[in-house]
Length: 145
Length: 145
DNA sequence: ATGATAATGATAGCCGTTCTCAAAGACGTG
DNA sequence: CACGTCTTTGAGAACGGCTATCATTATCAT
Ligand SMILES: [Zn+2]
Ligand SMILES: [Zn+2]
Ligand SMILES: [Zn+2]
Ligand SMILES: [Zn+2]
Image (cartoon, rainbow over all chains, first blue to last red; front, side):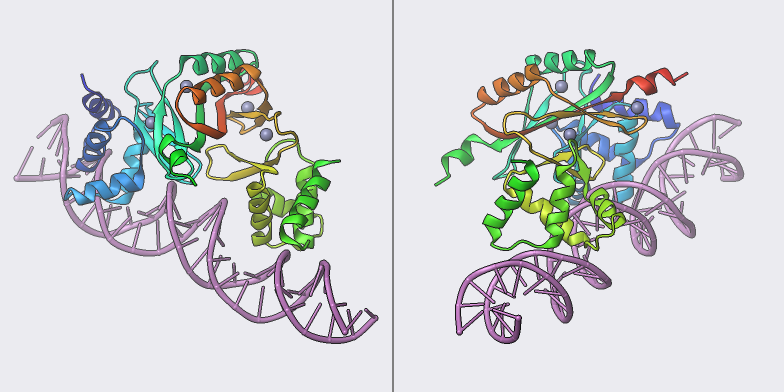
């Protein structure tokens, strides 16, 4: 069962109805393996001929976020991004290039266990964690003076 | 030499002038050991009788950020916070309580070295890294049914 | 087909941040 | 100290992402 199908049915279960705008958002997100902003989703759907309102995009994203079907990603530029949660125990974090803006996902078990260790030692029950590494990607480092 | 003094003189070196608004922002930040939003700074200065404009607060923060005297912190609520960088090799990250909103700093060498390891293995030169852990603090966990 | 009810989308509003520009302040010089 | 120049300052307008509103449309059990 693909993420798109799972997501559509989970959403229908929850609200009892299914509409066209939400379906388009879910299908587009299902084709991504890293994050997209609401604006990017909106533009992409418009370019493909759909007539989807801004509000519907945000509503769809919000609904999926509440069900944990999507991960909200904040890269610090004031724009919220979202990416599908394909597998509960298998997520990634992001490297952002300060020069060209490229966003690159990475996975690292060592980092994950370090985070778990911190959480455990603090009386905190940690439900989520965000990690963003910022710097210069390989391309940009070579093209610099 | 205190952070406030260092910062004021670094700023004066850079711009050649020193004004009153900037000084107030620096002195307030120098008394903090964790992050404050621009709004909080603005309000705090106003309450203390200063007549500081919003733009001046943002300008001061921006200038310090460019010189690396201050760390910009993004907790994902759409508000930028800033905290003094007291020591180059001695920074902290943040635990945020989803219920009460409390922000708690923590330091963890294990987490830092895990991040360095990731950066090293990717051809990336990482200039900065942000980590935010989100969950329920000890207080809020007890008060929950 | 019908009607109750949820989804949709244009638009207005909100809020943090940035821009603009005239007035005030800082500093080197006479 | 007074002057002139150049920076800083602050009120308010503008901007951009996001949310709220509400009349219209679509969905689905009956
Ligand atoms: Zn991603
Ligand atoms: Zn992780
Ligand atoms: Zn802090
Ligand atoms: Zn709490």
